[in-house]
Image (cartoon, rainbow, N blue to C red; front, side, top):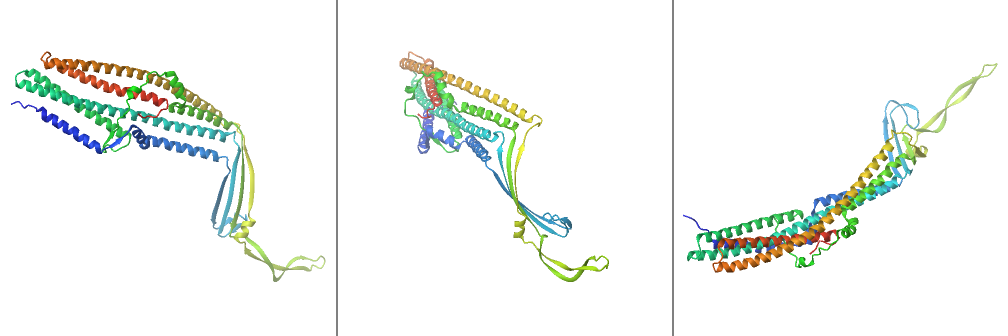
Length: 480
């Protein structure tokens, strides 16, 4: 027993799926192209990494400017010595525990370093601009990717709608063939052709739906959205085909856009930074002069001072009288000592120093000159890289203009082919209704019409995309 597939149930099920999708789409978030680009630029992790690199370069620039200011540092130490040792403040040998401390305030300032600091500031400025250009480059690349994916979603939506319409036509055709077969007007071969056409239409709907889901997933991932959160894209209202301008001059576009194109600006700023690196390396060949100064004081618990002298009541012999040999006596005194206070020692031990340091490079294994030659080679490489960036952008512009013209020709050809195929299908349909055309020719004409409609949809969005690329290179916003 052969099971027959009921086309009515299949079409009803397909219609139910479409209605369910439409009803769920009503409650979904609608995203315009501008919002898609903004969300991508806001959430993309590559952009955040590039912005962090910008922040690091900005801090390097701030630090290089502060190198002109004098440094100021304070320091101190506390020492405990046991047994026989030298008091660090009195320089006397003592055989007891000694506690000492020192404090100092030091400053230094570069006076001349071969203009190294000035060149470093310029180098960091160009490096910061290069990082900013790199961020804009990533933003531009992602923006173009978003536009491509967004238009792919719109194209797949139109392809799905066209496939659903073709499925409905195939269902009607199958219904008609079934009725005519039942009354004996059509053969089993005609009915089989209609069923095959209906199955092909169902497959086209399934493929179109899968492609649409994949393009939506890609767009959601670009925007860093949860793929499980549904959304719809807003179709532009303006007829973009009427606004296409294919008379662009590639040379004019290049001349207008090259200086602002992020890839070229990135290479240009890196070239300038490499040139300043040569000056920084050359500064190592010059003498260096710096100033330094210090203030300091200290304390020791063994430090003592004389308070008074008291008679001991005893006399000491200091000599003898000549001839009589009589002793000469003098009274003895005892020194009364006390420990010097911390405050007094700070005042007594207070010291100051200023000095200048001159360093003249004479021979250091040619490290300075090798560093200069290495920096020059790096600069030459940066110059070549910049020229490559300019050449590549020139190729991109010429390719974009060529693609735009080819895309417009393709769209016009696809539209003309679709209109011709539609006219031919209408004629074949009328002849088929009166039995002058067999089902094989009719189904072939319908398949050809379906393919021509798909070609028009794809060519239409490809033309819009090619035109948007030119606008983007000219600095125009990515809007519809």
